[in-house]
Picture 1 (spheres, rainbow, N blue to C red):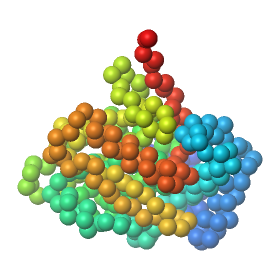
Picture 2: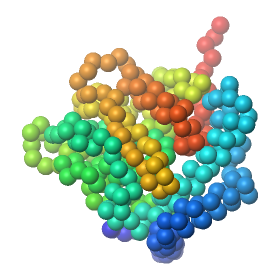
Picture 3: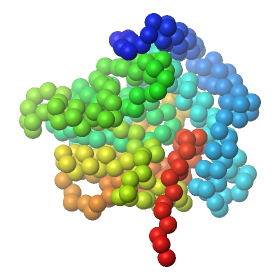
Length: 309
């Protein structure tokens, strides 16, 4: 696994190595120690002691589920902080995980079906901040015909960014900055029928995008919400199928992925229809298991402009 050291000072490189060593140490711990003792300790510190973003989480939950009693909101809130603690453990544990370890931790429910559908084709894989989303990329470890171009947003903290880059680098996975993904795809896609690896582009699509005058608003979790439309634009421009990655926790540290097709790459659709399908599928998964979503980010910073009466 290559080290990521570009644009780092000597001090930053030393700090990145120290953080990486801590990740390796956690990843080498026995499962019971990581996912029960350490995870529950992190939960207690983050939720009970630090009260990390409890106000934001509570506000988001109450606005999303206005009909649910406060006791239910608190139950979901506790579930979220347990999930957040598990995300941390699972993410840093990648530092000590081989590809075989990854495959043991994550199974793909409909693997044969997806690989058959994608034979000879590029595809877009839409994910969300649901469950341990870092593990969604492990699909790339199950196929040799495709590699995953995982789109990411560089972090402002260069030390943490370097560690995250190193955690995410695996066989069959290439990390592409968000601003470069269109150019990357144009430069690297293969003509139909040409030999070589096809590209699966993986994007987390539930983030808060910049608000534009022509932004389309979706009704999502009882609130007017804007979404990135990059997946839909790429799908229509390049006639690429779009899949939604559904994740389910089997037990602590173990997950199941299922890839649901949202668009086949040839269907004639109305504007915003592909994004609408993503929104509806994500909302359905959140309602079914709300504690798995990332409630601590300020998803609804933008407010829909009021039409003049």
